[in-house]
Image 1 (cartoon, rainbow, N blue to C red):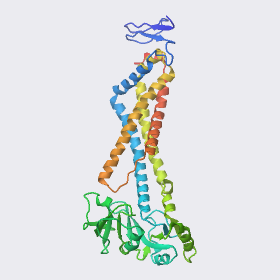
Image 2 (image 1 turned 90 degrees about the vertical axis):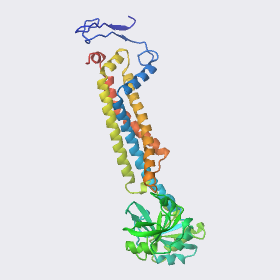
Image 3 (image 1 turned 135 degrees about the vertical axis):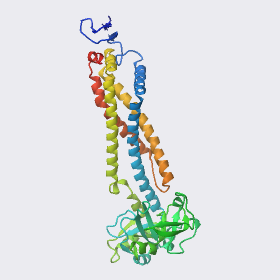
Length: 417
């Protein structure tokens, strides 16, 4: 029979092979062929037929396939969204801090580099001390307050003249402060929600009414800036400052200014940084909880994707016992069976990743519509990492079902009802 074994099946209660051993009830005729394939034992054109089989299996169970795709997509959305939110907030704050225009920043000992976290523990009177130092042309005290009233934001209390001297405001409309409860907002906030114009009233700091006196181009610290005296009065920090920004007559004199400050009695322990050094601290590893939150979300996402893929492929293997038996009886090796299961999983993972990335862009669009001031930054690097993590989780979830499928005995599989 040229290396082939013929299994003859007739209608009736019993199926026997040539040796008279029972095989299966029903009507079937199979030729188990050995040695006719160069690769997987299923003959020429096997790859094309296998691909057709894979897609046919996925389409034959559309609900299960859809659930698997959605599981991978949710995994990708979770990873990309948490990274985009954290990195967006981080880089947005970095850009706006860099746009203040200072060369140096002075803060109290042990103060956090993050704006709005350390309160206002420093006397604003030190501003005059710094202004008398050689090479210092501008000293601007600022109170930054982390606010969660209505939305999460950092409010800036500024001394307008000195803060403007660091780098002039670019007004789109309106004027500087004229009253204690005036507020300058940037153009990003002005476009938020229904929009804001000069003369509108907004609520800040425990529902106090502030009148928008001016709208400026974004990128100069906070999105909302009020007089430092008003800020100090409302948060119980009169005459205080969170930091003092300094402008040098020449950036080359930054080191000289730092040495002068540290040699001044009472200021030896104050933290003095160049803006470049401060901006360099705006990395995920410097923010408490960032890496932990990211790892927790990634772990949960991988577990979700793993379990759904595992359940889907394991159930599929159980339902396709007869099909696997036929493939093995035709000479398919264990590696071929494993390959079929893993390739089906790869197709699901590809579809899930694409749906996940598109959905994340949708999340970004919705957030921008509802919260225009909210930074949501998607990077190609993290899209790549999200893809790799999703693929790894999906393939790991399919390994055990693939192994189970490869170990099925073809005779028992064909006898399976």
